[in-house]
Amino acid sequence: MNKKIAKNFLDKFKVIDIRNSNSLTQISTQSANQVIVTYSEKDPTDYNVQLSQDTNWLVFTDHFNSQWDLSGSSSLPFYEMVNGFYIKDKKGQLKLQYKPQRYANLGIELSVISLGIVFLVITLRAVKK
Image (cartoon, rainbow, N blue to C red; front, side, top):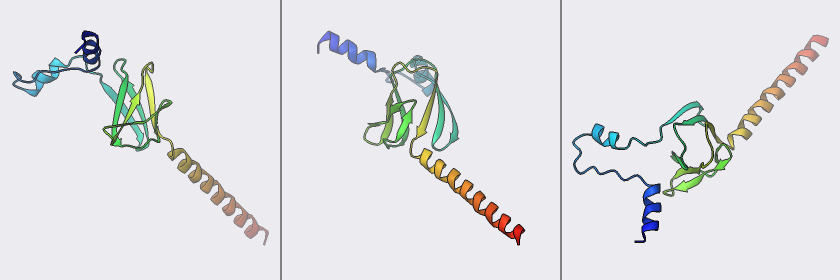
């Protein structure tokens, strides 16, 4: 294998040797350069995501659907079943949203407004009688 290709390969993947490890704690301390992902769930279709350091990829382990959006990055299939996002040059707080939910929310808002208008018209007609 070409040394340049091997270096590029090893730069992209972290290899952890677990042959002589006696515990999970020992294995986890070997991977100190892990990216820690913290998130808060507003609802099942809306998350705020914070990364501990810069990274190129984020994998969201929900069933793959290309309609997920991470701060402008579209979802790509990882292992043909989960969502992956290429996030190079995106830092700080990221927003993960399921795009079709916007239309459902708009439909709910329009339905509530329509119901309010109908209720108001019925009330005004009842008062006039």
